[in-house]
Image 1 (tube, rainbow, N blue to C red):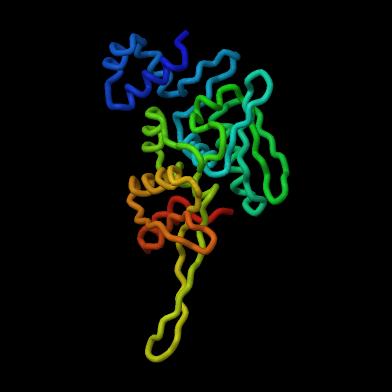
Image 2: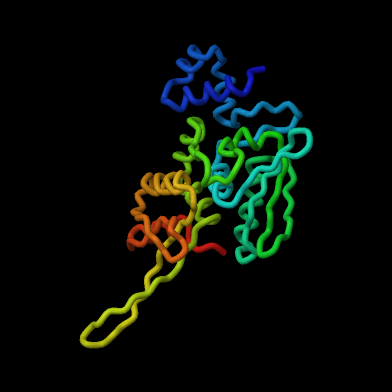
Length: 249
């Protein structure tokens, strides 16, 4: 049984672009084991449960939700509770969060806990810290938040899912308006735009890097009371966001 550090080291080496053969030679780990970790995540399953799955689109989406409105809480016997806060206003988001958790943790239970104005979508596992290594003490905007070497290829493979998770947690699609004088007449014009707001500069960077990857133009803006914003307002970029993300529901 390889320990978790060996597993992560092998996946980091693989993420740097080395082949399975080269990674196996460098780490002394079989190619079959490395392939299994790359598909299902590095966390060993000592409980007989299926390992958490990070190989599909559900994981980048859930990662985005976690970075925005999620937390891990350690309970008894090393079991962690993953909690994602979803506003009551968006029942579709609550259901999407549940589906993503079920896809990442097959066979596990997911429950909803009603709070004031939101639902805490909750699931428990000893394995959560392994696939959410951004977990740590203190608030996210007060500590370093970066993707591990094994996480980046997963986000790169499904950038829209990652963006969707971030937008569904800390983003919105709104309609702005402005006025112009045309032919001596004052006219009102409306146009849609997307905002993503987060106090963590690192999470803002992860979001903007993902936008760069899919060709969406963005800029940093400052709104009253919300100085930490990434805005998408260019018509072509908004159209891309509408195609892949759309308004929350």
